Image 1: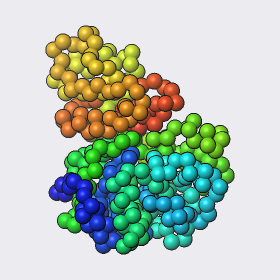
Image 2: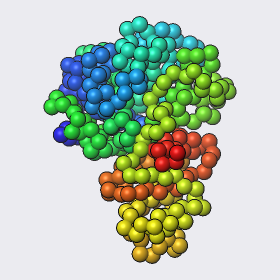
Image 3: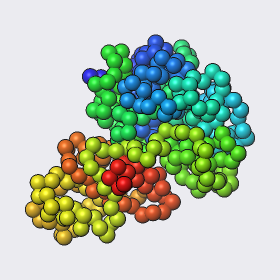
Length: 339
């Protein structure tokens, strides 16, 4: 089983060499940890899909170190792409563009579009620059976890999820906790007008302040990472419950099955007194600030899931624009239960 290794300059050089040889390297970005391979090597990219158990038609995002390299992956580069790149790169934004001919089908899921971004995490950027010197400089990297499961924001979460699926020459770089904590905002520029296909680390208002109002239509949109109805899901049954019903829901399940192991993701420091006094709960108290909550979300869910719980009750945050990315992840994480 692959174990995390603390980052140092020598290890980053080794990681770049491994990528050039077609191996996998899990590395931190500012959003989540990515499972990286040479993005222009179809055989290497196929190893990502095998390790994750990812469907072959589900595209992956390409990471690069500069705009010149990003432009080389696109068939055309609209003026709005320059606006967004100047405003938000390096950073948690992915642009969907018409792909250049040399971008492999393995990356795009057979589509004519490709997702590209420049991450801001110093480890990711250094790795990309090292790889540019000896290889393609393009790293395909979805989240470094089993497909559909909770994304990792710590190296230990990568090891726990897919460490046993990595090969003897694959590597997990430990660069500390990810700063943002949810995946990048995906903006589609492959159609007639810009549109958000996945909310993320950059909010709609910040984007519209740069390029003007975007369309909300998603019909005929390209497939993109993290957009399936069920995703980011714990192994335990997981429910997203309005704040006013959290106590009622926990008590109901406890009374019906007193031995049920229940966890809670709650936006409060302690449970109210109405919770059954003899109930042993595994509680994660979450921040009331949307950005801080996003930072803590996946780590908290991974910690709860490792408790072998039967049920996780998540208190729903406010339905406001600031919470859009968090709510998107929570709805997908609880989709199979909410149907």
